[in-house]
Amino acid sequence: MAASPGSPDVRFASISLDFVAPADLANFYVALLGGQLLWSGDGSAAVQVSGLLMVMQGRAGYENQPPPEMLDAVYGTANHG
Image (tube, rainbow, N blue to C red):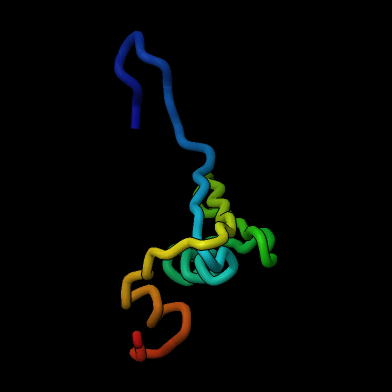
């Protein structure tokens, strides 16, 4: 995408996502987007996809429930309860 005349060419280089299980979220994005898993551990994980670095960070007490589609993709199960 070309920038407008006189405006800076802005591009995203990375994004950081908080999640209770960063390795699981990274695996989800690798499966979804076909990226490369750069690292994965208890506290963080990273995926490189199409020039974008996605860093997943663990966050204690994270309470948001992932959507059922993600649970299916990550865990291969339709059991959401």
